[in-house]
Length: 295
Image (cartoon, rainbow, N blue to C red; front, top):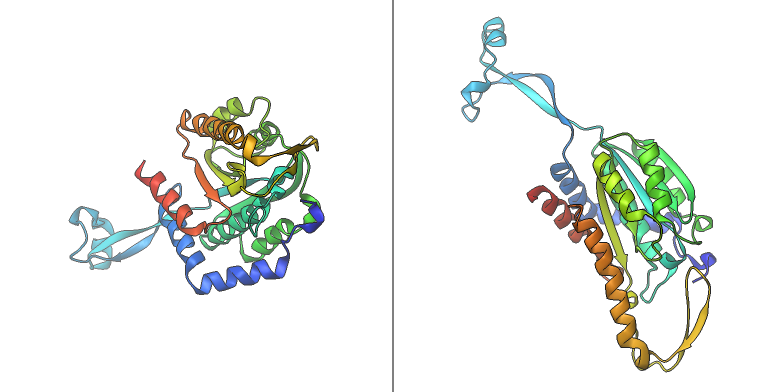
């Protein structure tokens, strides 16, 4: 799919998210993010009157004596988390057998999560990656920053090219502070180099959240379509095939690649979220957050 055909643009995506917020879909995502992605601790905010539902051990006796009223300390969650997105914008992400390319689907995931993160008062940033870092949006917070991220996500000039996850991971490791949250959005196709060992290093420094975006035809070929020409998204090499004769071998290789990615993250105790472009992503992401908490 040529980059110029990328259907992402600013206004429809913003409008869609505004509608989703009114329907509480993104609102649910925000609530789930706040309750399951915890801050770094609790910060003392002040005192409040003791109630019968409080544990008596929480009574601050010095403050109680001074005020002549039974008081307990009040704490708020100390957040200010840094959540950084590493977004695969390579050629393979421009493929679509449904109404959305994987890139469009991934951009909507990031836009929705960024909205939730900023609503929670945390910081978020973005790196768009092919064989190198195409665009960086530094970590910031606030409503205005959301529109900065949207503007970059909807720029077709940033999409296309090869893919080097190892390069992106090394950039994260060298650039981000320890304890940051790194969300990787990719189809994880075209992997090369030392990406798996760099995942190990990244997982020791960050909380890594990988999101694998599938198109239905990534793992299965359409039937009853006759001979077709397919193209390697990275080498541009083309070949004429008959899907009926190569389907079994194609599906076997495709599944092997997926299993390799799954095992790479599983062996490092990193939960992997897999999503398909023909299915909504909000509820799976909420369940993913909850699963991380139960672990």
